[in-house]
Image 1 (spheres, one colour):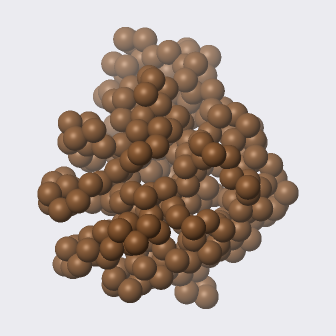
Image 2: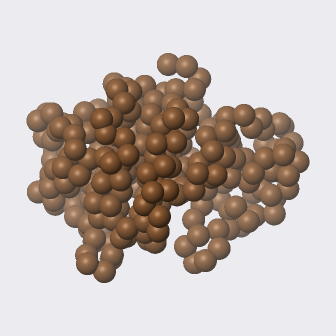
Length: 284
């Protein structure tokens, strides 16, 4: 392990990876606007050093995994493919829970089929509000790992209490929760993961544009810091996350080659004390 890598299960990945959700159509549903560009983005990401790709069969559905398979198979030996289960889509793109043990198994099998692999490096069990069958879901994931279909179990959208409970039952290789400059509720969970040596993978690291405007990337304080550092607001926001701990693994997603290059050069951004002071106190 170096300061540029961190273990994800029994694999070592670079701390800036790639989240593939945005390669599908709007709302992660349907085909991309430009399939050739989506393929180019995936290949460029690997060319730039990405060896950790986060995906899900229900992005599309099947669309994103099909793109990954077309662009990158045969997969590089060091490429770590991480997916997630716990949701499904209907014919209109609506998100549906799929949390029953048999649905979790079906989700893993769908990922294996669409990616064209025999085993996934890790699969996140993505929890939804109101779930009261956590132990049964964990048992299903443990069975899939014992069967050799997945190498590691991750958790997504979890509380600290759920993580503590899970690690008493089995090894957890990563946690994926929302975390960014404006959404810091998962900071205690990040610290817990750091103490346990578990990779923490923020989703929505750059906020989101749900509702029409990305409140993070348009925040005047972030823009001011970025201008002073001669950087893009997205790079500064990602650099802040990287500094939170060595176990933070980023998976910024994009369907743009230009944005991909910006994201991949984030490690060149140095946050000085003045920048950190401003960023640490940003709020809505």
